[in-house]
Length: 337
Image 1 (cartoon, rainbow, N blue to C red):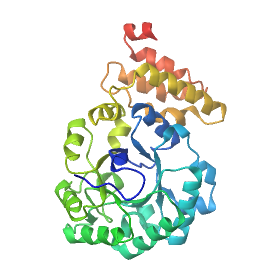
Image 2 (image 1 turned 30 degrees about the horizontal axis):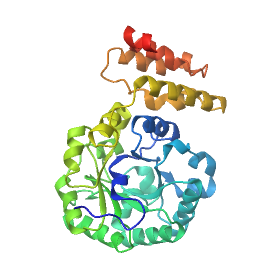
Image 3 (image 1 turned 45 degrees about the vertical axis):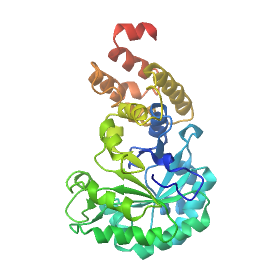
Image 4 (image 1 turned 90 degrees about the horizontal axis):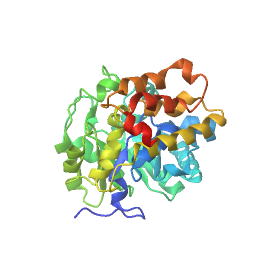
């Protein structure tokens, strides 16, 4: 039997997660994902401590209460700044604070955080302890299996071990190495081999911790198999390219008895878009997460084209969703609408 974490949230709280994705999982995308997966755990884009220390906090942290449970992912390497940012996150109502130790982008490397931090586990431990002292919600870590081409298990085991010693009990494991030189962020999601077996060794070696598997997961059967070993699964690009998979996963993993009705989701997003555009948010920002929603259905290309049409989006009229739907849906569905 998998253990329960030593705080109020049960291990099942991480059963299905949607990955933090820069320029993807903003608050509008998360609202849409919540409609598709009522009980999934949602993550913000990585927000740097500098953005919260020196920038517009509300712009970065505001979210709709419908998004719960939602976690704030932070990027940084200064314990005091991370503690400050974590405190803000808890004050704003986030259910979890997650430290990014896996992003390999050059921008992150220049800031000496993200995947770079895996080379400095003592510093990560100090960061985690500072955040734990600042908040009462779970403080968690998202990391890779290794850096560059070092595939030794001892590297990730020792990294997790030092963080585990702080009392951190939730680890989201992207089951690939991060190659810091020579590969783009996109390449880092595809080229380093997936090593689920290595990630599974962490589950055995730290039996009182919760491990969520990330990397290459897209199909319900694949996720169900992973849950035989791991406490949870985290879906990334599949949720962006084919968001309908979140509904299928919610059913397959036992979080909901049936997929949400498409018409209900459409109506809810139209109402949400109306509120947001009235508040001055460009419609294109509100609906960009919906572009891949109807992938695989006849007319899906027309759906995407309509929602990407700059001439229609300029009007900021949420009824563009109705027009896109009419181009997609068969007559029987249109009559029901």
